[in-house]
Amino acid sequence: MPSQHLMDFATFARNTNPQDPAPVHLWDPPYCGDLDIVIRRDGSWFHEGRPIRRVELVQLFSSILKKENNRYYLVTPVEKVGITVEDCPFVVVGMDVSRTGGVQVLTFSTNTDEQISADSFHRLTVGNTEGVGSPHPVIHVRNGLNGLLSRAVFYRLCELSVEHHYEQTSRLGVFSSGIFFPLD
Image (cartoon, rainbow, N blue to C red; front, side, top):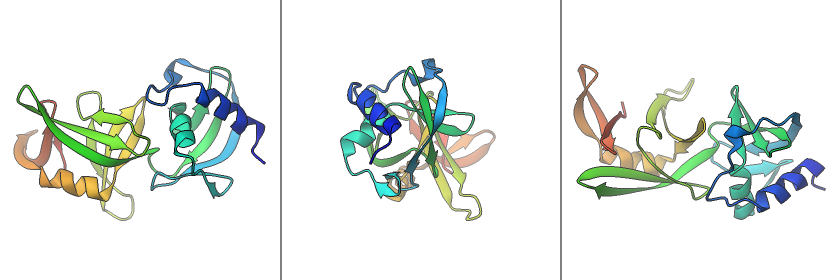
């Protein structure tokens, strides 16, 4: 049986347009506890240990997602509840390369169907996974929320990489919206 908070959030989320995330950065409602919702590293959402299979519900919940002090919450104007995010709340599953006025633009698609172009507001960075040393490529999606690039997207991004003199050294990276993003 779903908890009352989950049903309240589902009702609220149903009344929002997932293509236009709610202005959660403007809301500061009271904290009402935690829900047993987990966003796994692969981008799948679970409630009480069971997968949330309805894509529309995941899209709606992702539209009311907020990060504060390294914690994640589902937020409405009147309440917020904590959830668990194993890595990044989004996974980047696709990438398009286009040219606008002769300038390359990389546009990424998330598992929740959001589109983000790498630019000065949506920085592309590559760190390392703790303890493993493998690349951890992410793009800023919105309001402190990042999307982890899937392995296939990262490999495709690497195929586009060029050598460029950046911060007094030669680096491998990609250009998007006129900005160089190092990948090494």
